[in-house]
Amino acid sequence: MASVVFYFQVHQPFRLRRYTIFDSGANYFDEHHNEEVCKKVASKCYLPTNRLILELIERHQGRFRVSYSLTGTVLEQFQHWAPEVLQSFKDLAKTGCVEFIAETYYHSLAFLYNRDEFIAQTKMHSERMKDLFDADVKVFRNTELTYNNDVAQVVEGMGFDAILTEGADHVMGYRSPNFIYNPPNCSHLKMLLKNYRLSDDIAFRFSNRQWKEWPLKSETFASWVDQINGNGYVCNLFMDFETFGEHQWADTGIFEFLRSLPDKVMEGGKNDFLTVSEAIERYHSVGEIDVPHMISWADTERDLSAWLGNSMQANALHDVYALAEDVLASGDQQVIDDWRKLQTSDHFYYMCTKWFSDGDVHKYFNPYESPYDAYINYMNILDSIRSRAAATGK
Image (tube, rainbow, N blue to C red):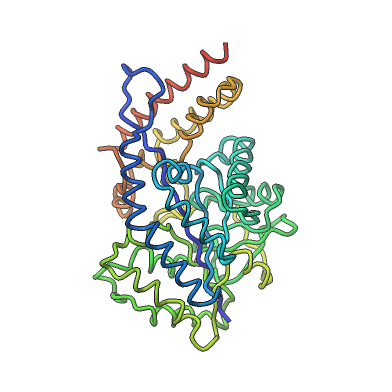
């Protein structure tokens, strides 16, 4: 039997407004644009896809199962501008067929710069999942699936049972992402690795008319899942939730594909769907995967170059975390929250200068004309945060 493990990342950042050195005050975020994007994606993706997933759960009497992680920033936006989306996730939670996964509340790269901040944000997120969905989270995914052995050890120390990451070729070698693994030097933590080929068939190639498999039919995809039998236990399909209706528009047939997929996968009783926790409970680990260097699910390199590929990004990341002591010592919750929203990885993604094979990805929902504009704007706001923290701390 091959078990499909669907995991969806749900995230929106608080995008920044244009802020110059002549501006003053703490009005950093483009509320109009953030509301506009939130409502747009809600109507195209979040609401119709959640309705469909609820329909599939009910139609298949709970045998269709999925896992989500929702960042703290997107949850705050739902509460402000799209409460009906938040309610749709609560309705899914009540089915018992949906698992919620922990991550850093602000979708940050804190692990790289400040372990205490990383742990604090993860605890904030876990508490939010409990408050909103009565979910006791047992699985962790770091921002953009960034991961190495050190991440695994810290996450196990926080009490998690499993962690998600990318099944990058240079990490996997001859091994398959269709098994469960353990990180080295961890006593019980299990790893699920993304099957990026099959995930990207849905997330990126689905509407590509030049792709030899276009148009992708659910029967075809189910046959690929079935081929895992004998060479694995799990088919880890990890992707942005915005794949459905936003990245792949409704007129591509993406909703019809999802609607028919469970029938085709479960046909004949050979394969099924599991949440992440169910997968680690059912299947044993087949060995260790050693990941000494950081990987991610971003771009063709599967590394950190999307956020740390140039000096602007490195400088901005260094400077925002250099403020940690002063900001936290200020005790001003608004300053702290603004500072943490500036840690969201998207701000550094907008500064990326990789305009080659991954260029279109980096331009998506990017509010800036160039990465240099993104850097200058960010640093102007960071300077304001620095001044506020210093003034409050006196």
